Image 1 (tube, rainbow, N blue to C red):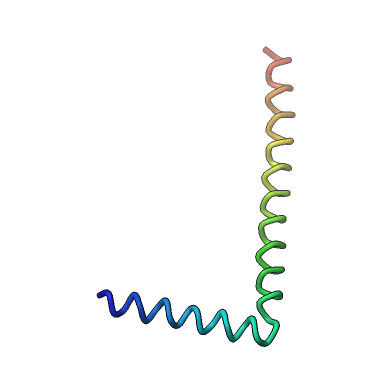
Image 2 (tube, rainbow, N blue to C red):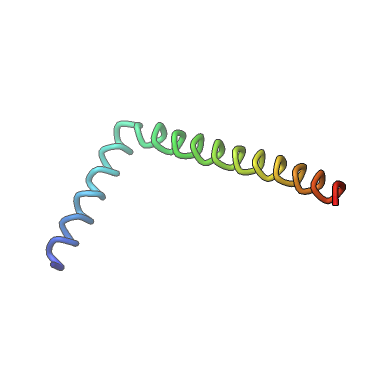
Amino acid sequence: MAAMQLFAQDNSVEMADSLRSSGKIYVVVICIVIILVGLLAYLFSIDKRLKKIEKENQIKE
């Protein structure tokens, strides 16, 4: 089991090294950042709409 974990770690390090050496690691990082920014923007928009609905609901009560 420990040997399998070591192999997985070595493999991921080799993959990261190959991506870094070819310059593709920046593409991966940019994609992750774009996805996270999109998720945050979506969450903030949902929060804004939810606050608006809650405010309208309080006025009706």
